[in-house]
Image 1: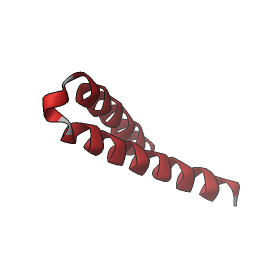
Image 2: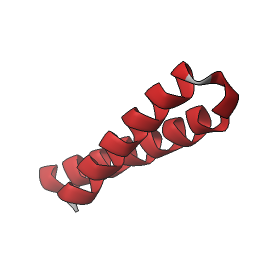
Image 3: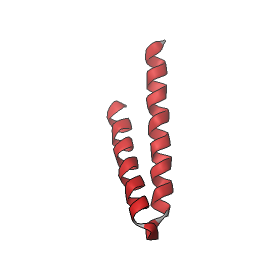
Image 4: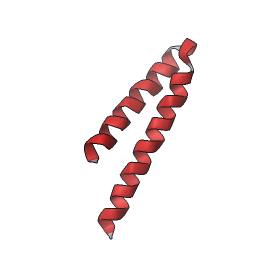
Length: 52
């Protein structure tokens, strides 16, 4: 679970930066943001479960 969240976070950051630098592929910016949000949600779920 942790490896998947880290992998999604890295992919999201790479796609986010790639989308910012290459304006022709603007949709990658949105894909990067979506993947980052999913990674953050997964991290929060893991953090909350660990607290209980």
